[in-house]
Length: 628
Image 1: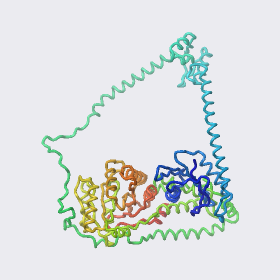
Image 2: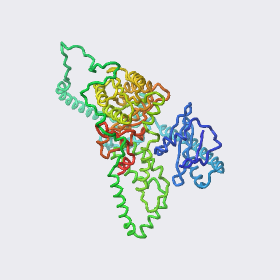
Image 3: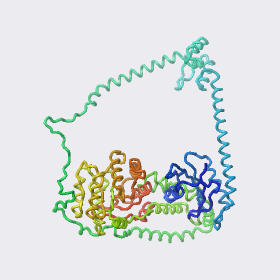
Image 4: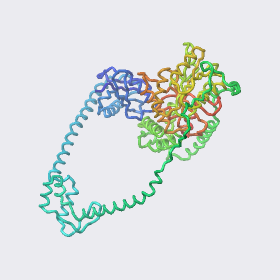
């Protein structure tokens, strides 16, 4: 049963709802659809599934009238699989757009029209259901008729071959492999009787397809082939012993048992040691972090000037074309855009995005969403389809990359300080992406804003991880909480947060072990750490070098955190820290892929090896680079 049908404008004004249905929807499926699908350029999908807080789950389908700026949404329970929804939406769109007036707000007269359209759509589906079983019975009857002629396998080719075999006396018949055989033996009636008596052989004997000479020849050929292969095997078997020889591990007679590889230096007290004084202190020497500097890109202004020059140069050309071309452009301006018109421009745009390291799946979904937003719109006069598509894509990219919520960490730190608790940030990611290095960069940036920071060495898996973090802590002169190796990282993080609360540290930066998204034991340990400590921010650290793998990493990290969590409302990734951004030139597509697949904003961008090389994401520069 249809739960709800809603018509509203792209600005959010509700024009009409079905009063007959009147079902109170559990949760907020319409708001969730707008927030997580339509606004994030996922409107190219066929449907959207919404799980309500209770037991109910809905499927939402929608369509657009891009010329009028209208959205039509139908909601029904997922278990029902209503077949008439797509057709009903198309009919409602057709009839409502005919009476739509931008000055009107109420459309109570549309109730009767919708009632008729709904009955019509349901009647069509019922007719289709009645027609389909009849068609299946007819097919079965035809099969029975074909098979009733004898005990053959129902194969037309066998019957025709049998007829040819019975009719031809001296001519050879073609075998299935295309070769002919002159000697043909026709099976007599007595043989047919024997075939019927044998049961399984009756079908073959009726066809008269058995040829003894052919079978003998085929058998002889098979024997030759097997003998040839046996010769080959015997020849190759001489070399097999050499290939099978494998090198055995060397075993020393006097070797002691393997000891635990824990070379952590003993640390005084609870792990908050100042460490070696020989390491230089660089807190005041590195200068201002790039997070606090406004990024000035000279190439952008140069490109803008070039665009202006091109625009100026193109004006005289437009005048030279004369009235004939302007007439065609004006005619083209009145036409509605169709999907076939958009496909060449979208294909070129998809290829361009993929060359910029955008994942193929993401580029395809973006192009589908842009096509859905442009289909049916009128092309403005003196504009090309390619420029219209590029402008729509630019707006979509800006909308995706712009954070939907505040990413001001300093404000959140002060809010946590008022509640007398430390602000906890957990850094997660795959191996070798630079979690520890960029954790130190974030610590340096927080220190410049007079925020007290503590590091927590919760990477108890990788050798040297604790020493690496301890080196950063000594250089930055900040405390570090560590418990060595082979400890439970969730317990270490909890003790570090308790220690920070006692010492008055405002921020705790938790370093975790790198893990692949398919490693379930390590992902389970990470899920436990997040569940036990409930951090304020979970940052996914990812490389800007990855392409299609970015989608796999983020989607599986979120999926594992959701599946392995003991909480009914699991914590997922809150933000992204993009590393090695200075090594990719114009291949900036990983930022778009990560944000699109997770819905989380890029909060930091690592662009070097010093503590100051941390900056914010420049959305305009990224979009311009992607479409360049």
